Image (cartoon, rainbow, N blue to C red; front, side, top):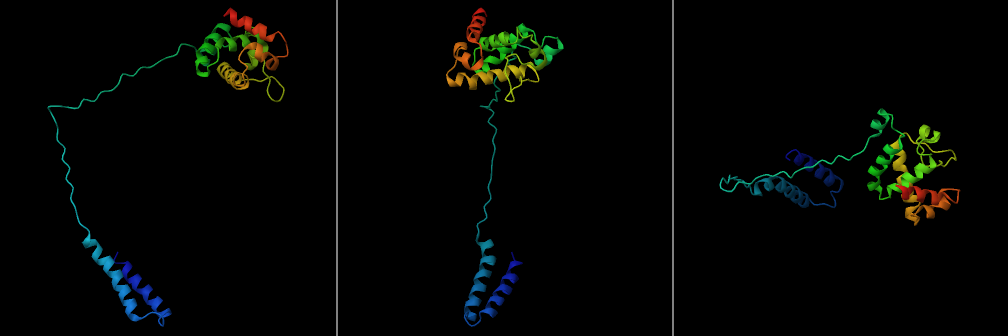
Length: 198
């Protein structure tokens, strides 16, 4: 703080020299003294307080920390790795279990996803299903058949696709989806028949 005082005095002298006709020596002196008083008096004028903190241990009424019980839920199903390791990546029953496991996350009837996959991929065993994990007969925007890196990604994408493209637009049954999803007029009836058999 004391380093600033000589700088302030030097600056005030320069201002005075440039504007000496307009500023009286009395005003400059009063400004200097005011500035000095602020720097010198202020630190001594502030009250100094000391704070005491006391901590007492109450042995008659101790506070008990309690940790709530934690539970771990392990969903029943198989990971993609497990399916591939066992050679069941395209087994209809294993795919059904995976679809049932994923369905609650999307709020779509698992039977609808399974029935479309069953119909479009010949019980999940068509060459398109085995090579590209395309169980649902869907094409990419380029016009070629879509592909997914693994079974789970394909199934999750189908749930999202049905949710956004059909169900959100009021098409909830295979009959309502028929004219958009497939060229065949009997597609809706076939998917409904498979769903009813599950």
